[in-house]
Length: 312
Image (cartoon, rainbow, N blue to C red; front, side, top):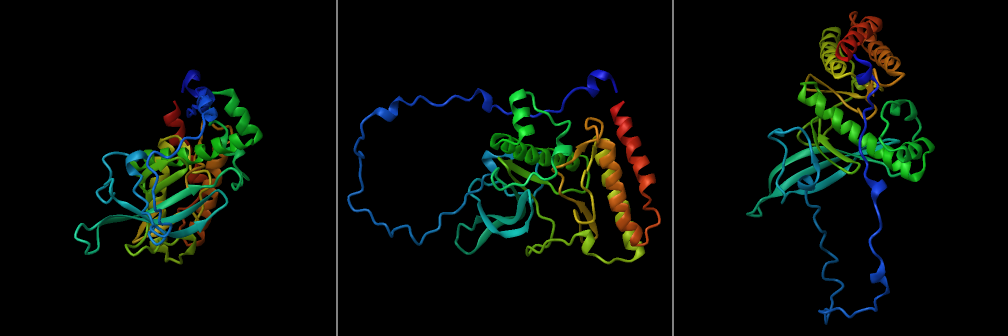
């Protein structure tokens, strides 16, 4: 890879530095009466009526197009939050059902289930391990880089947006390349909606760490994982936090999840260290399940060769 390309930062643009407050002269104007006041307001009128949460798909950044046929894109769809499935230090993951009500009132029309990942706000989010991952993800403006480095409230918000955008972007790239990852449906702020991996009745697929499988099954799953890691390496990335806890298995299909910390192996000074750690962690689980092919150094060499070939 040429020096010009290797030194080029991978950046995302944030436009708040140019923001100026609206003109505030209107605050000095005298109060004016409501031109059409309600003569007999009824405070109980809407107390028993829950406003539906309309689909945000139209206003969000959408995943790779054309979207899979199961994605409900109707602007009249309703998003029904079914509760938190997993609570983490950086984000909560909930189950969401998006559906279009049946016009005849006989039930629900088309619908789909999605996993919704909501990154925590600055005051509640714990940035306990992000410094190394963020190397190589510098943004263009020095003010923003300083804010992220010193962990100001503004800097933490920028980091939260970086995590959400990074996961959305890498999921889209991998999904387009044929890797076994959830399809990223949409991104709105720090809320990422993606394919739900599990049964049609909302039971999430088990994590690899929860399974006890025989050697032939483990060998077959390891082959699937290596295929996805090759796609990741061909894009120049390492997962960065790979273990048996962020791999799902559903109906014999292995799905890699939790990719916000995906590392640019060449652009990050610790990139190859993260790649080696991924190989050590995941091969440890498969080796304990009898997969003799799961040799961490051999896997690391194969993936490193993919990364270096792309970087040239």
